Length: 102
Image 1 (tube, one colour):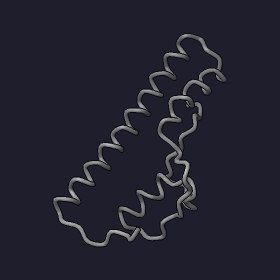
Image 2 (cartoon, helix red, strand yellow):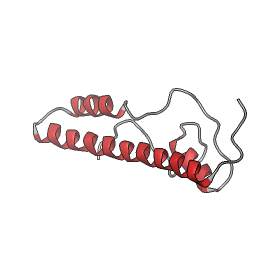
Image 3 (cartoon, rainbow, N blue to C red):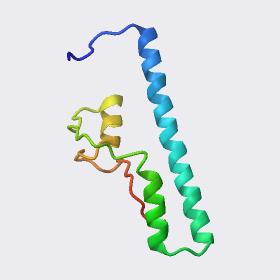
Image 4 (tube, rainbow, N blue to C red):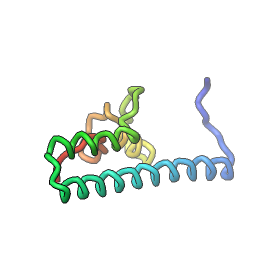
């Protein structure tokens, strides 16, 4: 399949809104995982149980199963790809999807 190189503004708007909706889902899932973390800690659960439970929730978000090549540019799309890409070499802004205690 050939790469998309041209697109009407209206079609791009629709695609970008779909991306925005997916990012909003990732944010909501992260917030749910954090609420679960707090509830489990308040309930006196062990660190291992908290980690296992929160990781179960985070699994719905990522990381993706298909490896992608890291982007090399500094455009908005490049930065977004690398933040979500487990294969990116610059991990400073990378989003991880496994629990790490606060």
